[in-house]
Image (cartoon, rainbow, N blue to C red; front, top):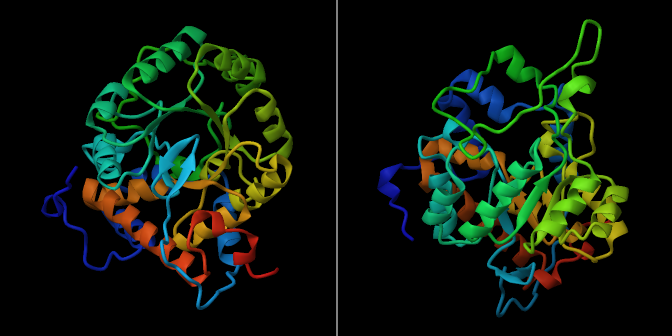
Length: 366
């Protein structure tokens, strides 16, 4: 699949993921930017996500034999050309009129795997029809099991290869940036796959908690995960785990993989950085299921560090929206190309010819 660079030119000074972030902030309305870039409460977890990567140093190696070097690996038994996946990101039409359809075209052009959000602004089927790459479907458990199962059956029928169940956002985080900016979802951006579904409603009376009285009525539990596991043969990954204890429960529930994530710092503030949580989870899991990391990845060196700590692959979320806002499908393709090239350079300069060569030895002792 080809992407026409003339359709949406990339600014000449965009040479790294953070350049897309800078340009996107200049282009998007202030309230939309507050939604896309906003974090929970004081933004400490968001900051720690970056600090965790920045604080870990690499141990460079020289004169390594790099013949046959490759970023290819396997994940859930399938060939993965490079270990950078597109995370589920909701409401992508906020950043570009083509939204998820632009993203899937870009992902297809470089064979990157893409995870489609329940809250996508294009249908499950339309995204699949536009795709020439591996798709996973991110599932938010709905208030009614029939609605949840309907989403699963649609994903199965459209050829999605796995389910990603996000479990760390049963209620919205306290997002003060959005509140200060007065963000409201514009009418042209709609969660088309869940329109008409029952939503939690507060039943709180005077002096009662709106969170505990109604908003948590349909929050999923491990019993719902057990039910879902019994209803589909698709691999299931659970996303939003930071606790090693929850990782153990996920394995016991038959999960095929775990995505260590703090939701980009957008839900509960002061959770640990995703990279720090990954280190703790990896020590408990000991390779029994694949681990992925989501949160804070902005450089190819970040990918290398995550794999060294125990990840099989990483996911990128916010950078997709930045690149979409600046240059549509061309921007997302360019972003992925940059990150892959940076990752390859980092592998070469730490003496890692293959993904299997990446271990804790690439990190400078702390």
